[in-house]
Image 1 (cartoon, rainbow, N blue to C red):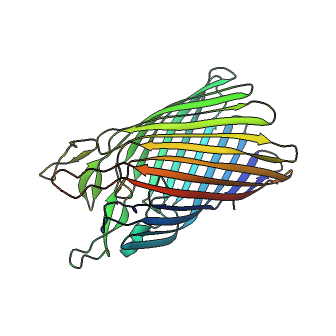
Image 2: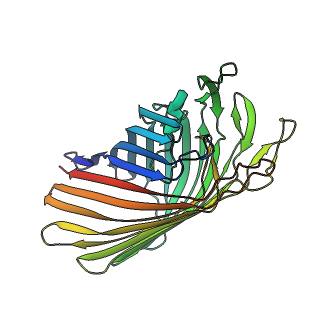
Image 3: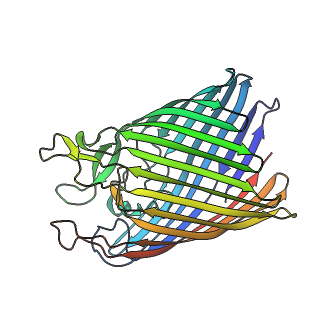
Length: 397
């Protein structure tokens, strides 16, 4: 169950927040994941229990500075069964550490600097049948359970245009470290060997706007990211295509009791560069193997006098065709997904509250035609259902 504790120092300069949560996912469909593993028939189902945790420290050591730092980690257990294959894993996840310093003494602008680390405390290599514990990321929170040491600095500036409108401009770079991934032994064919993976370093530029007036608030952002060359065991493999992401959210308090919000994003990834016939150079791929993704989430909340608030939640996701996930080394299948559920919270005391969430999801994947030159490699249309269950506790002191 999610827990949250907040501790504020006596001088009110610093706030410490701890969060913990448990999320339970279960799904079933007319095919497992990945969809191209023999036998190419039969149903698939899986379960993932994910417990993320976070420790955040925020404060103003002086009137001119604001400091925010966050440490995130967690544990996961996952199991998937597909016709002829079954795999499970139990592991810690990677640990993320971030820190941001914002300078407040300049009128009209607030420059900031952020540093992010991904610490490889999870399991990136899943040998034997354990590799089948990787699941479709559109059905569960985690598709992979570890990668390398990543270091990502970001520089930016907040520009308060008016008391109600703020713009943010930033640029970041992520240096991605190598990590191990399971591979087939060349002599036995068993998944007991190891490949050394190096995903391309990433550069990102982002612009964002945030607006609030009365009962209405909104924010939006536009980012563009491009990667360097990815390699396996020192040999170049591909370069992921540049990505454009448009994201936004809006919320409105209709009355003291009723409020609604909507958020979502659209992401487009250009064609990858792949190795040519010589294996020495990268050329644009013949067709774009990446997908456009659209996701929208909506909810409405009603607050009662007794401290209980509840309301419906819904979401929609569309992935227009298969997309390559370089960390997992697998394609994420094209699909349309709908979800419907409800969320509730109860303020038991001034510093103690409970919350719960349940969602039922439906997915459908269109027919995947045969790969040219490989008759019988196509996949029929697929459908499935999944559930998300979440319960929690928040404690503030």
